[in-house]
Amino acid sequence: MAVLGTALTPSRVKVMMLGAGELGKEVVIEMMRLGVEVVAVDRYENAPGMQVAHRSVCINMLDGAALRRVIEQEKPDFIVPEVEAIATPTLLELEKEGFNVIPTAQAAFLTMNREGIRRLAAEELKLPTSKYRFAATREEFDAAVAEIGIPCVVKPIMSSSGHGQSTIKSAADIDKAWHIAQEGGRAGAGKVIVEAFVDFDYEITLLTVRHVGGTSFLEPIGHHQVDGDYQESWQPQAMSFEARRKAEEIAGKITGALGGRGIFGVEMFIKGNNVIFSEVSPRPHDTGMVTMISQDLSEFALHARAILGLPIPNIAFHGPSASKAVVAWGDSDGVSFGNLENVLAEPDTTMRIFGKGPVRGHRRVGVLLARAESTNVALKKVFRMAEKLDVKL
Image (cartoon, rainbow, N blue to C red; front, side, top):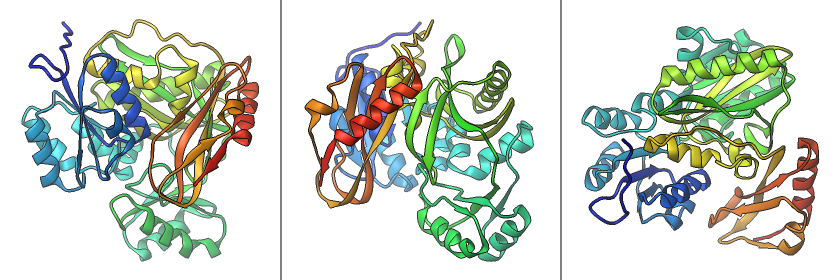
């Protein structure tokens, strides 16, 4: 029987968010709506999720001892990783000691490291993937590129949101790609994956929810990325019946192998009726921010329900929708957003401002959302919104 108490009282259910970025912030808000007590943890002060949580703690989450200290002090009922850069071996230890890691500590461990999840998908589950090789040294990297062939994609095995990712289009790009990967990894320099370039018609995120009543699949989300960093997403992505069936089968297998409860973002390439597995995140996905306007229960609300053992009898889809990331460029300690009376003038539009502080180079600081009679019209709406938005540093 699912029971929820009252935050800041002895009856409370306590959740600790490990990572308090814009995605974590939305999960915190959904937990707050259900009376859950939330502790937000991140590597920097005043992260978005910290601004809406009951308490916050700033630590280096790759420091296992520091991570253990804060978890043992707070004794949360649920530990919810929101980023990859976490000392996952410590989570494995804590889970064995009785702590509840979402979806599981093993899932967090495998998906933090592209090598772990790729070997699980391709070698154990036999899912279709691109050809790949791992490389720990420059010599291994050069050999991997030669074997995979050009063009190919290079990523650190520990990174997200496109950090450290690049595409080798000619031999002249090889040296640059190596250095980008070494500088962009969340845990510093180290091993990389070299993947064959996949010829695809489009790519999707299939949000998959494992909950007390089983597994549910959301409408597929199409998206546009630049060097692995999401720019726009739309829902639903048009797919053939056969491609969608295969996508759901792949998503079911990989999330079933990872286990636990919560939402997973399963990324796949689609070519005709063929589906190729790319990656999986055991948490809300940035491309899934479109669900904040497309559905009655966003990916964040679904994650909260699944974690807490609450039923998800249905997911009502409101209609074709789109999202566009707002990226600030420059050097500033604060960002302002102007001309909003025109940005939000059209019907069925909204936005989220993340509440991020300093910008050094470029940083995703918000998202624009629209719903319309088709995804193409919704996309045109968010592009018009972006043109009107005045972002000042």
